Each structure stands twice: as C-alpha cells, then as structure tokens.
Image (cartoon, rainbow, N blue to C red; front, side):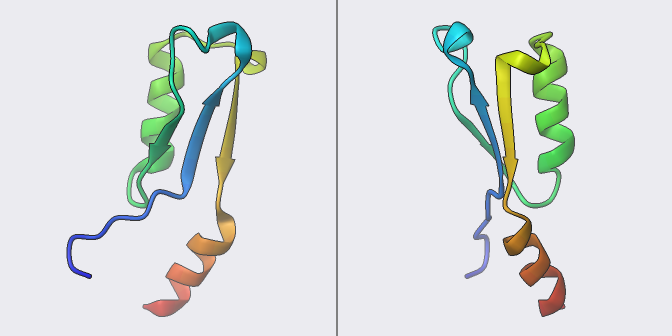
Length: 65
C-alpha cells in the first residue's frame, strides 16, 4: 500500500455557498492545516460550512507506529 493516502478531514459547504464550493477531503498529514487555509482563503463564516474529522481512524493510525 505504498503511496496510499487517507483523507480523514472533510469540508462540507452549506447550501448558501454550494454553488461556489464543492465538498473537499484533506489528507492525513497536513489535512488540518490545509482545511484551515481553505476556509481562510475563501473568507468563510462559521455558519457557511461544516468540518468533520475521523478521529477513530487517526487514533488507530497513531497506534500502528
């Protein structure tokens, strides 16, 4: 599974901005920072989007080391 990335971070635009932005997934390594930068770049307010993180997957990944 070399080169396989997981995307535990999910950005979901709310209905008022769905015509401008799509659903986005961010990778396991720099996903949190990239998601924050994505929100800042588009100057979004907190009611305009939802962000989800698959914490169970990240927790399992940290135990594998």
